Length: 162
Image (cartoon, rainbow, N blue to C red; front, side, top):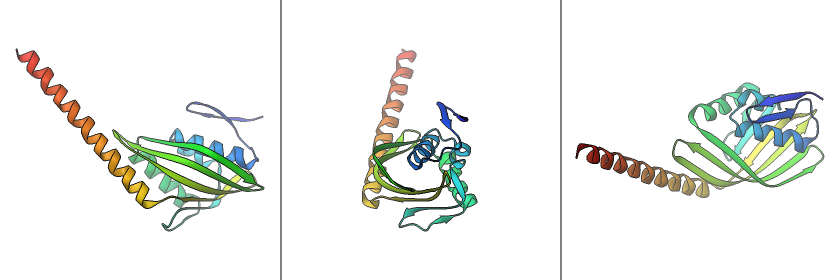
């Protein structure tokens, strides 16, 4: 068996079981290990966050994933259910996007198609209203955390000046 080292562990390389391919891919994304994530996808992959336009081909998907990793500070895919029917894998997840103190949790249903051990289709469905509400909630929490931090610094400075 061949293994690929991720930041938090090892995963099989050359695996062909569709569910294992998808879980390995999501694990690599959680680690923001884009090179490892891309090792799970086919050169002709189609990736779409419905209803946005699809990214077609490895370079287009790579660009989106590297942008996510560059501007985000964390990603988590909490998989609640995963099912496979031949090459098709369905996931029901809560995705968590992070950037500094901001965080947004929202429900996602994903459809993956795996061919020859590589993901050829990745389509995620989510509710925009839920995503926007989660984003606003995350911004509010980040603002409160920032205000508390600032107040704490001011109090500390005042105590030092006494």
